[in-house]
Image 1 (cartoon, one colour):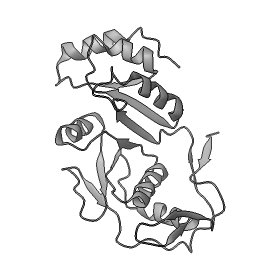
Image 2 (cartoon, helix red, strand yellow; image 1 turned 90 degrees about the vertical axis):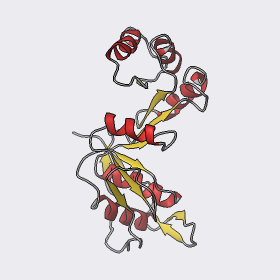
Image 3 (tube, helix red, strand yellow; image 1 turned 120 degrees about the vertical axis):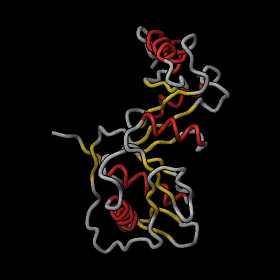
Length: 212
């Protein structure tokens, strides 16, 4: 039997979020917003959530989960970063609000109006094994090698619902140390399609034992 988890926890009519424009959205209304957006998302792929509004960002995360999709959370949205995401994740698309830029990706825009919550009578569940988001980060440092302490703390806090992907200056000569010091199970390196560079990193981490 598939293990499931509630999309949100608590009474449906309890407050969920204060809106930037004023007013409060209940859990019932949040679920309605997530369901309405999920129905407009592609049937498969990975979401690059570019929503500026914090509430709509949360709605995007929830909608992706309802679609059994993972959200991608890179450290920036530079053209090179977006290009690498497109190359790595099949069907990646952007979610934006307002006049937001989808950076050349297939783009879904939040609806102008929020949904009514009248039709929501229960909190939906999602597959508890689904990775909610992949967070690409160097641990706040210039390189992943310099950010190992923070990366290790992030891995421990993330548990099984988030995947921390270490990136930034990953090379064959430091990849194993990054894995062993942080516990990450995924690395992101700029290899420019160079088979030798890719193989060097793969070989370096093949016998690594991630710290936990």
